[in-house]
Image 1 (cartoon, helix red, strand yellow):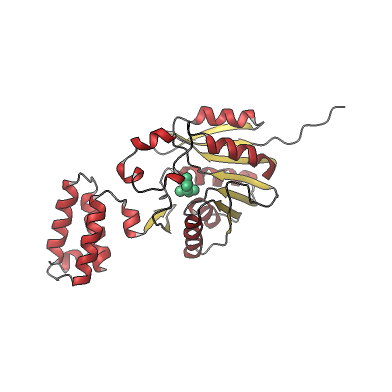
Image 2 (cartoon, rainbow, N blue to C red):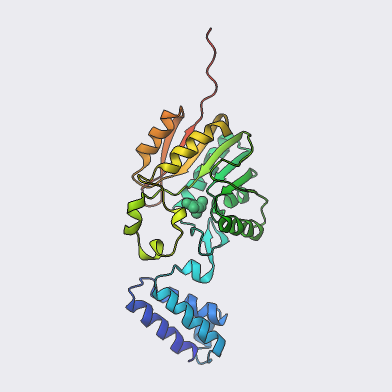
Length: 285
Ligand code: GLN
């Protein structure tokens, strides 16, 4: 099989599987197997694939036909203009999450954060991009080993130093005060997971998606535990599901947080909630 035939075959098979991005994905799969550049796919179209290249190509093609996300096939994705490695077992960073990072950076201009913790860090995309685009000291936690391994690789890849801790939320984090807590926790209601796209529900870790019965389990826990870890006047920033703003603001209010703000993603959907821990009440007696 030569390059031209391989490309045609991949496009045809992915289109048949109703994969919308079939043309781009076909190229990516072929580029990965052959190490050819975009231009070479056309200037070297008569070059015959080696046995090894062909078997990698056919294997990846089959995986994509089963709707495995491209990021798991190529092992790489982009977030905030930075490269991140990903592997199965860790959530693929989403463009929506850039709204969360941008909101924190916006608040930083006024608040001058020095120390932030990112809870449920996954690939580390939030902590790493905050560290890359500011001088804030970052700590990232996750319960999953594979997430922390990936996050460590990503910090190296992006040349930033971050303190990683394996912890169930804040349980194993030594007592200290942060200027802000940031988190994109799992927030899909358990029974909704089955309604997600095949590429998500069959391939991405449910541990990183499942937000409990109503989807709010982790917000509740992080707010309750987080109060003790925030300095007075410290901030909490959450990514939320587009219909969760009111409920998450209520959890924050019930826990004494003030100054709630809701921010939208590029699609105009509610995506981020920010709120502030009060400064201590002035004693009146
Ligand atoms: N913080 C990571 C991300 O935004 C992982 C989120 C998660 O595991 N729910 O991609």
